[in-house]
Amino acid sequence: MQIQVTDGYITGYATVGGFPDGIEVPGSFLEELEPEKIGYYKYEGGKAILDEEKYAAYLAEKEQGEASQSEYIPSEQESMIVMVKAMLPTMEIKDDNTKLTVSGLYEVWAPGKYEVGEIRNWYDQTWECFQAHDNAVYPDIKPDNPAWFTFWRPLHGKTKKTARPFVPVQGAHDMYHTGEYAWYEGFLYECVQDTNFSPKEYPQGWKSEE
Image (tube, rainbow, N blue to C red; front, side, top):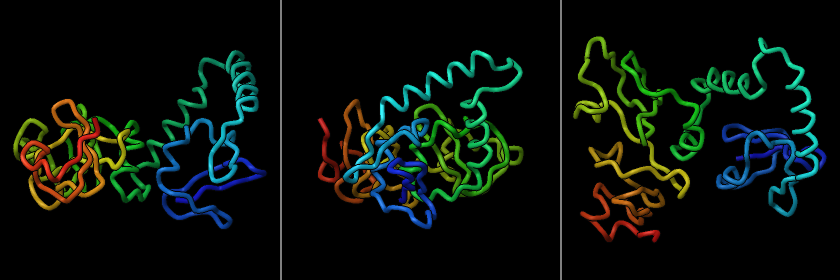
């Protein structure tokens, strides 16, 4: 992952590709940033430090502008959400954890025609299609049917923030790997060795984060 720094402030970040003068940072760095505050973080000593005064001035100016804005023009935030949602299918986000950090932008699953790589939310899980299908032809491929797991896999988080409820493993495509997190029976666990089993079935493969 890279960040772009201009005049001491973080002005952009990239999880895929990068910038000509970008600065390499660990993937966990993204968790410290709130997207709407990009441009107001100072980059000092390898850390992102929010310039509270500058950000407060921006909010005041923004509020003043919104007060005089036409009701027919969407807000900046609404426009950004629509734009990002439109771009999301073309973005090459390869790892599950990054996909989960932006999972609020994915649509809720509904019957339809799906291609490999498409992502949808359903209750507490975010799922990725790994086998193309059309519900018009195969109506049984839905979340409450066993056939679902032959076409969709749950994304696994690698941080406490992106952890999702444990989903029984169906095969090599959705097994849990070392470093991934999952909630199980009300407790958070970290996977400490690749496994197809739950913390209850194979406790040595998991470490409780109590």
